[in-house]
Length: 309
Image (cartoon, rainbow, N blue to C red; front, side, top):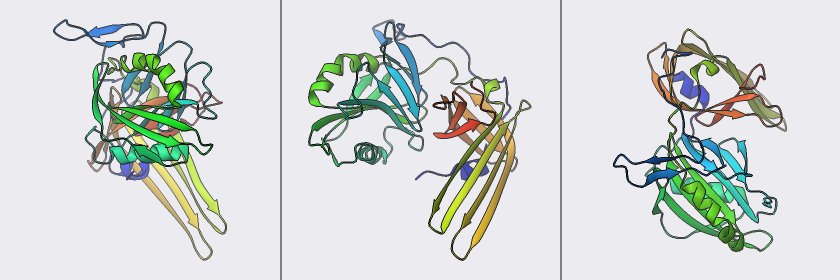
């Protein structure tokens, strides 16, 4: 069950811009990191590849692959892949409310996410098996499905725990998956926790907005949310919502203020009433406009001015 951002900020959002608690710089693609005993590298970067950050974890994708963030997912595509007819489709999926690989709802989340993606039933093959993913411990699940056009596809999910649970997911015909596995194994071998902060605290200092709603027949609702982070370490959250039906109309307004701080990709917020909560934040880019997008526990807020990062 996902809490609304209004609820989360009312229950929470310590000292702000430019006061990032983390240090160091991330290692680039093609690098590797050894264990403390100096044995085999814990992870191996992809030479010539580039980094993708998802759910507080970094992995490399090979040269020529593209990425497209979409909500709580990031699609990645190799050159020439036919994703329209789902000959092969690859993505990072994640659910910010699930924090560990032992979370009771993880398997059901993956089942539902795959059925929503494919619009057909999926059949899971047994339980998860442990799987090393670069520097991370992960788990692997397998599914099969028959698409609406009658083709069979194999499905693999390699799950990991970063700032929340995510997975590298592959959906492909058996032939395409077999052909692509060497590149997928490279990606799997490059997983690691970033050494640098996901965001510089100074970049968050701005106003971020989100609007959504539904209109159907004679009823509907709308909601606008706004978060402002300032350089003195303060935040202000404002929300306005309205709903209407055949015989009613109502409105509500929420305002919450407090202090905030950033450590890596963890945003800690303390409301003025003393209630505190920590959120996972990620930087994203709005498709088509290039505007900066701040994802807070997966929920996207657009920079109000529309400026890029």
